[in-house]
Length: 173
Image 1 (cartoon, rainbow, N blue to C red):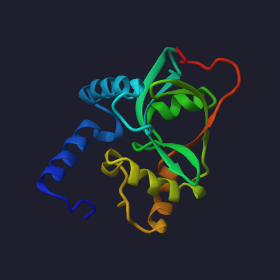
Image 2: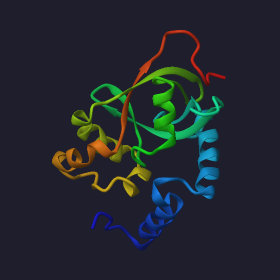
Image 3: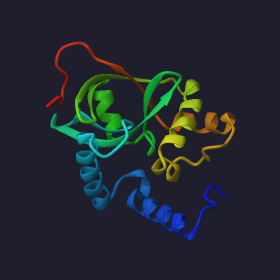
Image 4: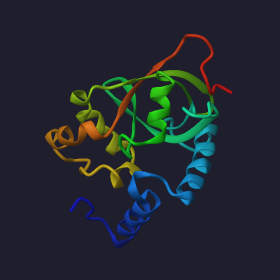
């Protein structure tokens, strides 16, 4: 069993599973995510790894904000889709050809380049060390061997963050 914590952590695990049943946030989870996106964007209360991703919606073009955790690995920064391939922000980033904005007190125009599944395992392990919330959704423990992460890597998109020095990106406002 992956979670061997207290009864409190078991209850949180169940709550998190309920909020994201079927790998998609329910109405309450969407409201909570909007609130966290606002808090993370201010950059006042949290470490730098708590960011808000701003990217145009692939259907409406309206800028959508997602609260995310940045994982650092070997001097690079990464975003991980803890809910897997069907995650809305992943679809939106792909439709925007990787152009987005990260907010944590200030706006940073970025390029998000998808990492090949064969290179994701160590980044996924680092992500679980950085993101307590991700542990509920990724079925491998944070101390598991890399081989365990290699087996699931194709299911969890990972994007390398690089500064985008080109023209004003979508969602920079």
